[in-house]
Length: 314
Image (tube, helix red, strand yellow):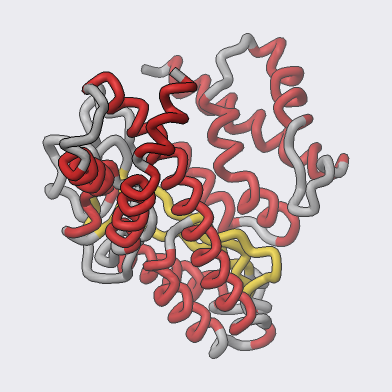
């Protein structure tokens, strides 16, 4: 099969390059997401153009692999370069607000929302020491992590208002292109416009019925839903300050995973948590300092104990 792929690659070299280029142009409109319907159209067009070529139907899967091998690396590299440049500019434009190591786990369509938030934060009192630590897509909305001096009057309330405003605006903004969108519920939740809904292979029956995932409660056979545990971690994050708040911001998702995976007896719980913490690294990619480990260990114990009690009470 490898020899045949080499023959096909040589025989159809120009058509493969043409197909890759056309698919890349089409997919540029989709933010370089892996949009299989777009690829399928271009690939079928290539097969039609090669109608008189000396190959059989058995060669079609090999041809598809050849095109994919050329296409996806180019798309991933192009999108990564585009995305990195956009977020680097955001950090450079707001050095007094956005930390230089900030991690943003969402697409470029929401960058204008983050810029609006940064402009607002520039107007806050200096004593608040406002800082944007990171941001991520969560259940289809934009979740910003903002640090402040909790003891300063009005700081915490304003940060909560700002985060909620951006969250709600993101639920009406396409994550990919920044146009008008809505929450879509498929194998995962994502807010996109009508055009970019093509990134989904299918939708849940209740897609379109929910504008806000906090109000969505799926049936028991739907794996994706907002959990009370995730909301608890978020609430705890904004009730703390200093290093404890930073740790909850940085490891919030990992904390939820550890709690959900805690199916060990209570006498083995300490060992389970310790082994999980062994793999965690700080933003400087070094093991957790003992003080950080102690706090996270205790916090995880509290959450897991509460989860055990909740399950017993069912």
